[in-house]
Length: 226
Image (cartoon, rainbow, N blue to C red):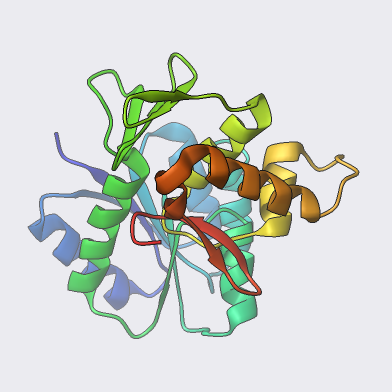
């Protein structure tokens, strides 16, 4: 089955150029030249991934990303000419999965899109219930975690935290973003809550706790290379 991408880009030549490369790799491509049309397409049809430009007429990419995230977990790659760290952090806080700066190679964009889908899918079983990373196995259907075939006893919040990190595989997650997503916006605790739970989670996962990496002055990320 072909994967389907939604390409949101107001520059006609850029949009055609990127579309050609995705089609060469057997992707189906839906196109939108503004944010409002992009939201309509997301409402009316299913897509496997979204490539979203930031600077667009009618509705900018930040707003589009936020509105999509209110209803969907579809992977999103943001493309922009802006390279400031604050912009990248904003994109991640709004729920983007990748951030690509212009100019870029369309071939590299296609490769990153393919890799992103593989990451977000994880190594999953036939019914999609198993997430496998090294000797760490998370059974989403049974809500169990094991390392090297030994059961790991996690609290409900530790389990939710682990799933959240895995869901955003390879992406740096600010502690405030983790706190809001896992504990809720109305939670009265501070950022140390995240640090404490990360420490406990690593300890319980033993050697496989090394997949939870600390990014100094930024937050945490889950990846095999961590």
